[in-house]
Image (cartoon, rainbow over all chains, first blue to last red):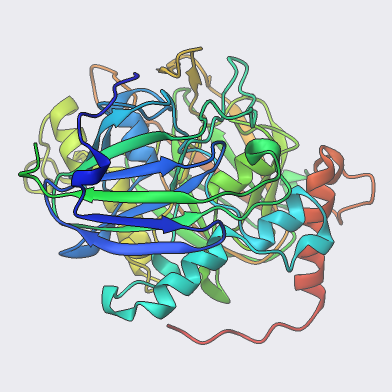
Length: 216
Length: 247
């Protein structure tokens, strides 16, 4: 459901551009709001969430879509952890539909999807692995890298059980905004994929904005 | 598959769990004995437990939302744990996850072990944690699982719809393992099953030795991606791979 936010970018406490092929990992406190902006359009923000107090309790795509009875994420979607606890809720969305079936690209799955000689190309999972290695304070490792959300990606499912990677519904400046329901760790890979038309073969920057709860 | 040569045949009652390590080349047949069964399954590489079944890669590599004959189940390392070489059901789910204690209690009431003994209402998450724990796996090792025999279709607006009539008595699926695998499974109800009474459906498990995979194998050729998945898996099987140490 399309629902723009009232928050002004100039009032954000934190702003950061994530170049394509790079990552962002940080804590977001309960009730803080996090906006992810698709700066130039058709990008994919591959995102994972963890409960800060117990990172083993983490975003679960399957529990999230089952609980809401729908495979697409948009305004109102509660992002659940394996325990059933709510990690965050989508409170604003100018795109209308986000994917959580397709997972992140990896060097290994690229060999299967595109060609065996793609094995050395950059991928979201490589960014995730570097993120957890460079930020040991969060206590994460490959064990914790699972089935993520692809904000801004459009993956329609057909009634007969097919799956397509369709042209994105997103465009320049579109965004999704979340409110943390508890203290969480957020890990985003700005997808470097060069083999998929989902980003028109042109990975572009994302921007992150964070507002404290008391900002009107 | 010649079941007369089966090395193992056993029954898993409804609402229970089990696990096994299977060598490459083994065929696992699951049979829905009474109809309406559900088998939750997770798969790991016993030589490196960090390598596990990856539902998103499985779906996107084959552009499918459901699993049926011809599909392969991928690990996160671009390799094929097993191929679905036979399927009389036609649709198996891998996007709805598994039930947990709170859900089961809400739908079917609390039936504790203390009061109900073997008729307690076990849930899928606890079943996976118990079976995984036998191999040192914990919450951090969980992943999106397969729900054999269960179907949840998707409407145009993305709404999920569980089909209680998907699998009938005698329905079966054959999984041919392309590499060694640790298999965790349970027979707890599908998390979208809204049956009035906790559905307790037995599943027969049969193991046998599969025939060698030929160049014209149906699963290998069902999509060009699977040809490459088989190439990755064969490279891994045929080159030496010393065990990667425990975490």
